[in-house]
Length: 86
Image (cartoon, rainbow, N blue to C red):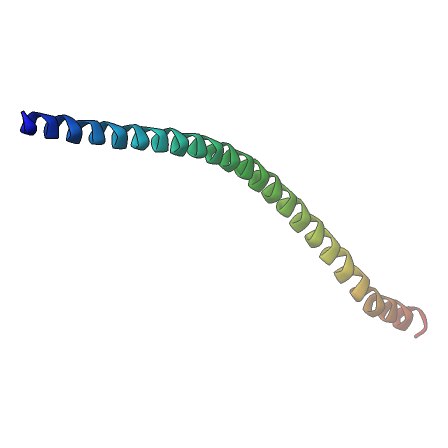
C-alpha cells in the first residue's frame, strides 16, 4: 500500500511538472509567433532599403557622369579657344 501511495505521489509530481512544461511551451510558441511577425516586418524593411540603395546608386552614377562632363568642360573650352584664336 505504501508503494502504491508513493507511485501516486510520483505520478502527481510528474503531472504538475508536465503542466508547467506545457505552459512554458505555450508561452514559447506565443513568443515565436511574435518573432515570426517581426521577421516579416524586417524582411519588408530590407526590401525597401535595397530598392532605395539601388535608386541611390543610379543617382550617384548619373551625378558622376555629369561631374565628369563638367570636369572635361575646362579642357574642351581651352581646345575651342586654341582653335578659334589661332
